Length: 109
Length: 333
Ligand code: SF4
Ligand code: SF4
Image (cartoon, rainbow over all chains, first blue to last red; front, side, top):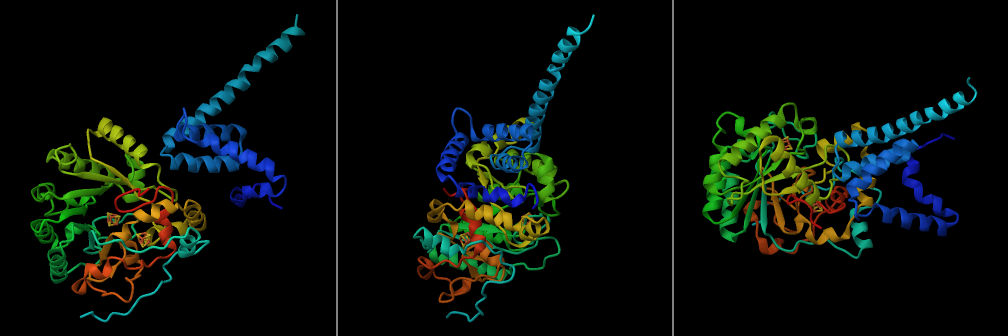
C-alpha cells in the first residue's frame, strides 16, 4: 500500500461509504464555503492554497493549485499567497523563541 | 447535384472519455441538432506564421493546405445566394491565403458581417503591414488570441517573442481605431496555458483590460474565454505530459447541460480548405464530416437542408460543454 496516492483525490467521495450522513454534512459545508460571497471564489482559492501549504496536504495543494488557475490567478499571485502563509508559519515558529527565552531566563542567574 | 465523397468516421486521433458524449446528453434528456445557419466559418488553410503548442489545426509555416481561389468563389456564391449573415474566416493565419482580401471585400460587399481570426503577429510578415488599414477599410471584426496578459505564459504557448509582437500589433490596431470604442471591434481570446479550465469570462476580461492598459496602454472590446480542445496538438501535449485522463475527467465532471442550447455547431457550418463541410472547425480537424445524408461540399450547400441537421459528436465535444461552455464566441452559459 502506497501513502498519498494521486487518484485518492478523485475518490474523495468514497469517504461517504460509511456514515454518509456525516460526509454529506461536511460536503454541504465545504461547498458552501467555496461560493462567491463577501470574498470572491478567486480570493477563497488563494486562501485555500495558502492553508494547504501550511497544513502540507498534497491533495489540497493539488486541488487548490488547479482552483487558483481556474479562477484566473497566475503563478506570481499564487507564489505570493504561498510566501504569505509560509511567512506567518515562520513568524509563528519564531515568536515561540520568546518561550525559550522565558524558560532559559527562569533558570538563569 | 451532391458530390459523392467518402464518409469519414471517427479516427484514432479522437480522444476517449469516461462516458460517451451522446450518453451524457441522453442522461439530461438532451439531443444535439442545429437550429439554423447564421454563420459560415471558413478555414482557408493550415498555413500559419506561428506554431502554437495548443493549435487544434496543427498549423504552421510548412503546411501546404491552402484554399484555392475557385473554392473561395464557391464560398462567396453561397454567401450571396443564401444571404448568410456572418462569415467567420479562420486558418492557420487566414491572411496568408492569396484569396483572403478578395473574400473579405466581396463578403462585405454583399452585406455579411465578417470576422477574421487574426493572430496579430502575421501583420509583421512581408506584404501584410497594411492589414490594420485593410481591416478598417472593410469594417472587419478582428478576433485575436492572447492567452494571457503576461509575456511568460503567452510565449510558453505561442512561441518565443510572440507576446512582444502581439502587443506591438495591438497598438497598431488601436492606432487605426480598433478596440477604442469607435465601432471597430477588436475582441481578444483567452485560453488556458495548460490542462485546466478557463476562469469566469467576465472576471478575466476585467483583469486583461486593467493589466493591458496599465502595462502597455492597449485597449480592446471583449475577451472570449475558450477551453482547450483535446484534439491535435493539444491532445499530443496532454498525452506527452500524462494529463489526458485527468483532463478528460475534468471536462466530463464539469459537463453543464445549460451550455447545450448555445453550442456554436447549432448555428454554424464549417468549411475546410477543399470546400468540404463540417459541423465545426474541431470536427473538421478530426475528419468528422457533416451528417452523411446531407450535401458534403460548399458547392452543394443549401441552408434549408442544414438548418435542423443532427450534429456529429465525439468525446472532444466535452470541451464545449464544460463549466460555462466554450465556443468561437467565448463562454456560452
Ligand atoms: S493557434 Fe492560430 S496562430 Fe497558433 S499555430 Fe494555430 S492557427 Fe497559427
Ligand atoms: S466540438 Fe463543440 S461545436 Fe463541435 S460538434 Fe462538438 S459540441 Fe458542437
